[in-house]
Length: 365
Image (cartoon, rainbow, N blue to C red; front, side, top):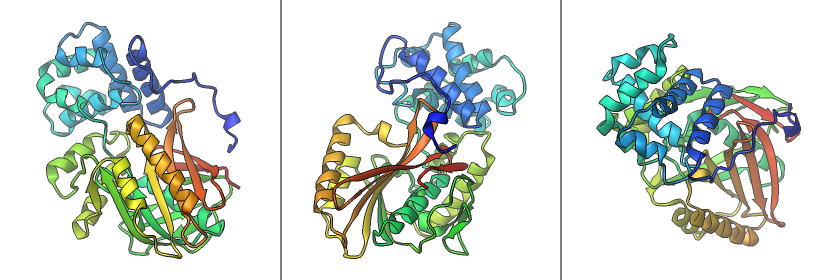
């Protein structure tokens, strides 16, 4: 299971593709991606959106989607509009959508076309920015990576920095409890418990501690604000009911102590945080999940340069790690990857992961 060569041979996808057939390709890829991730209702909604447009829906909303100026797959265009439609369903403002979200047979394209026509003004702003969720289940990947890094000899006390934190749900990862292939981590009175389906050998069973967490987002979301919380819920795939339960638990946790999120872009944040003194005996760890595709190219380059420069300065007492959980669209899975210093950069893929933390296929041995 752990060998990527055993994965299905999907069509190679260019995340940066624009114009021409890029938009229909993005919708088709998103449908396949959702189906592979156990989200048939979301796949159905995404398919219906494009079917409505192909079927002749012609308004400002449909034209903006069909003539998308950016890279539709990297921009998560299908999920932007799908989130808007889900918000109509959650607020009960478009009852005609009910059969789709309940999994009942219906004329999906007609229903969605009517909704996109009737609620055009309300749906247009959903195209202005990428989806925001930061699903709590992804935290299992970060904890597994910390266990592995500690087993490599890095200090097991972690200073966590996150880019694209959204509402900071993963910044509260020290408040959750995890069962990772039988290795248990976290407080007994945890705000949430995670036990992903585990494949492969368990991660190292090593004591770890999280000494601090801080993140950034260009548009931080306040979980304690009901309207902002509802918007986050609209981005949750409706068939994943456990994610709604997790969202409520995250809201409750944020009301006890809000996560530390700076309102700034990813590159500025990383450069500023890396410039701060690092406490000896701690591992400074940059982490992100399903974020990198939304970071502009110039910022990606700045972050990479800053991390490599900081890695060159790293010591055994002040090491640096970079942990990412990002999509590989060629296999519709996510890679848990680690880069770490000192001693020159070392890089390894630790696992394949479900996008919402349902399962982890550990391949690091």
